[in-house]
Length: 288
View (cartoon, rainbow, N blue to C red):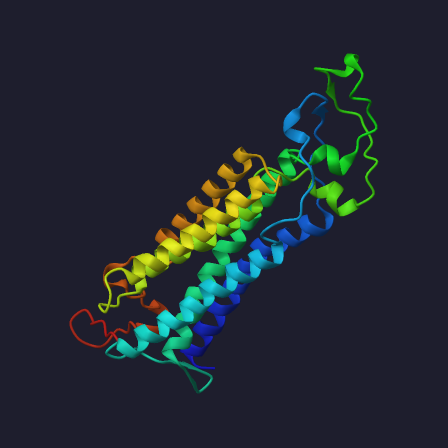
């Protein structure tokens, strides 16, 4: 195996290991995680909202949140490749890796890593805090006589839920922060920043900003729906949106190479640069 092939293989393996290490705990939280069991006050009106179905379901959230950015990455990177003066093709095991395909791998890989980091950050907070959702009483149906005047202003920690849906009984303790809000904020804010860096079409001054506005409104609408559906308190949505936005900004500025000068990717030093010492006065460096 030649030097460049070894470098590419090592790079891909390390990327997938890093992504796996971040993403695997998300599955552990989903299947085996137990949220912190917080108590409640009988007179807490914020927990007495009715249970409603989600306007933006989890399936809609994840499909749109992944499909829309990835399709945008593929399209923009293809246009950038067609407009470029030429990009160096990679060689792996004697086969040529198309520059567009390699660029898409890097862009989508960084996006996926950011999604996993944002999701794991949200889950750590959810399971550590265990805040009750606004529909707590409707889902739990606690075995506590809250009509008893002696139970007012009393913090009730020991109780049993009479509700039978185990999935909802677990979810009712995962209110803070809002996962829908953090996920939509990360994906749409990151896509907005990506378009700012990579979409450079002179045919319209407003098209890029119009698309960016649509992305932000999708995140905004998703966050608002979580309050109107009584899935989260307003502070849960605010915290989730801020967390997703912050992770998106950090990923775009410090993990990706979107905002380097002229928006060109960094060279892969080991694959592109060969330093060799030649005979002569002190030797010289040759850049391949």
